[in-house]
Structure formats: C-alpha cells, structure tokens
Amino acid sequence: MLKTVAATALALSAVLSAPTANAVPDVPDFVTIDVVTVNGSGCPAGTAAVAAADDRTAFTVTYSQYLAQAGQGSGPTDFRKNCQLNIRVSYPQGFTFGIAQADYRGFASLQQGATGTEKGSYYFQGMSQTASRTHNFYGPATDNWQATDRATVSEIIYAPCGEVRHLNINTELRVNAGSSSKATSFMTMDSTDSSVSTKYQFSWKRC
Amino acid sequence: MLNTLAAAALAMSTIIIPPGGAPGTTPPPDIITIDVVTINGSGCKAGTAAVAVSPDNKAFTVTYSEFMAQVGPEAKPTDFRKNCQLNLRVNVPSGFTYGIASTDYRGFAHLERGATALEKANYYFQGMSQTEYRQHNYAGPLSDDWQATDTTDVASIVYHPCGEKRNFNINTELRVAAGTSDPKKVTSFIAMDSTDGSIETTYHFAWKTCPPKP
Image (tube, rainbow over all chains, first blue to last red; front, side, top):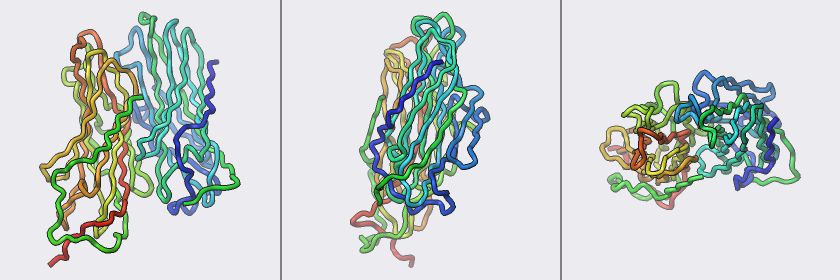
C-alpha cells in the first residue's frame, strides 16, 4: 500500500489564540469539530456523506464520485478534481493545545510514466494565508493509497482574539498521464477522516 | 503556488461624506456583519454552491462544484466565460464605523502555452450604477492552484445614503482565451474552488455619522 505520512506541522504562522468570548456555552471541555459544508468538483451536492463521532472530535467524509483521470477516455478537464470541507472548530474555555489530523484514503491506478497527486490546502475563513501539503504517487501502481497530514492545533487553529473563523480544508486530486497518454490513469479519494485530540499545555496565551 | 495579492484599496472615486457628518468623539459600539443573501450565475447554478458563515457573521466561505471556464476541442463556444454573483447584506451599526473588507479567491488553472485567463470581480451597491472592479491575470503555460485577494476600506465600499439600506454585490467571473494556443487541439481552463469574504471592524481615529433626522 502506498503510504505517505507528513507529520510536519502546518506552517500557518499563527498566533496562538486564547479562548474567545464567543465560545459556545455548551461546548465540552475539549476541542470539537463539525463539518458545515462539503462541496467541490469532486463532491458535488449529493455525492458526499458525513459521519460524525458522538463526541464531535472526529468525522469521516465519504465520496461516491471523487475521481481524477487522464489518458484515454478522459475529458480534458478531468485530470483535476477538488473537494472542500468547511469545518467549525469549537474550543473550550481555558483551552489551547492539541493535535489535529487528517487521513486521506483512496485508490490509484497509474500507468507507467503517470503520476498522481493528493494535495490538502488549509486556511481559515477570511484569511489569505494558506498552508498546503502534497503527496505524490507514481505509476505503475494499482492499489489503495493513504496520506496523513498532522498539525498541532495551536498552529492550525488560529483566530484573532475574540473572533471565530471556520477552518477550510480544500483537498484535490490530480493525475498526469505523463508518457502514458494512451492508457487511462486515475486516482480516487474514498474517504477523508479528520480528528482532533486535546492536550493541556503548561502555558498558553491570552488575548 | 501562484499567489497574487492585490492589497491595493478599491479606489471608489467618491467617498461620500453625508452632509452634516462630522468626526465623532467616541467609538461606535458595534461591529459590521455580513449575510450572504443570494448566490447565482452561470458558474454557480442552484445546487452547485455551498455557503458557510462564521458564527460571528464577520466572514463567510462559498465553495463551488462547477465554476469553471474553458476553451478547447470539447468546450462550447460560450464556455470561455462563467460568472457567479454574491449578494450580501452588510449590517452597519448605527453611528457607522471603519474597517477593512477583504475577499480571497482560490482555484486552479490549466493554461496551455499562449493561453491566458483572468479572474475579475465587480463590486457595486444595489441600485447604484457605480461599479468598481479588480482583475487578476494568469498566463500559460501553467497548471497549478491560484489565489487572489482584493482588499478595500469599508469606509469606501460600505456606503449607503443615510437611512437607506443597499445590499452589496460581488460579481466574480472567470475567463479564458486560447491566445496563440490551438483550441482545436488543446484545452485551457480556470476553475474557482472558493470565495472567502470577511470584514474586520477597526476603529478609526475619525469617522462619519449621519446627521440627525429633521
């Protein structure tokens, strides 16, 4: 199985945010995440399903037609598809540190000479700064693939003091036929899983 | 990644000071908030756009599933331009304020050598002819994500005649031109994945207030 783990922290050069005045009163004593919207060329309406854990610290999104392809039988714009998740992150009072992780799983059928790419772009609503992680796969390959991006919440969860911003994860799949343009190469994403675990740090910043 | 940042403020040529308006002496009490009222256009037909608004109503994200302009052997002659228009309600607290609004556009472009594309946004108030626009250009060969940012002073964009309410329109468009590439053989396209808007309320040293109603 192709497996790439990029455990490097996302480089959102962010200021650690203190608990905000806008915290929802009923939030539990740990960080929770909720999927607000799922949309993109790889996951048009009706093709993605979201399953959230009861404690709201993890979710799974599954896709029925998230597939990028190149080569024979492929349309000229089929080589790149995206799916963007908009996520509400809620933090408890007094909180601040944790680990967020996203796992991407799918299948790749890549001819000799073809390449496939999974890319995750992470940014907060209303902020231009974008962090991204890319995982490349090379043909010949016909197997499941998996990629993991991990970040500390203090880096990933940034909102200016007193403000609340949703987190966007824009995933994309790209296939380049390369020297194999006769045959078809494709890459699918079957699921995206994200989770957040809460840790208490010895010190944290306040607004 | 292509990253075009146009931080220049929108130069609305007339920043209208209400008659009798005078700098105040105490900061206004509230913040500016925005609501997305409608989303529609050739690039974002019903069911293809999703909106997520931040809990404080100061930022929103719109994502698209088929906002793409293209030229090429399989493209229709009218596919080279697609648009999506957002209609926003901007809630300005009484007494007015000053702040910064910004819009981030993100997407992907595949442009053959010789082809060009642009992302353009028109900004205007409902019922007012005056239109401002910002444009970002891309040239092939290129096959990568792109991002563009427009930033403006709220004092200049958020104008409504005192006592009147006008929604704010942002009409975004994507265009592709084959240029010197051969659209009978190769395809060039530009897609928009998301539009993010936000308003940061800042307190300026001087601000304007509407005159008291007679």
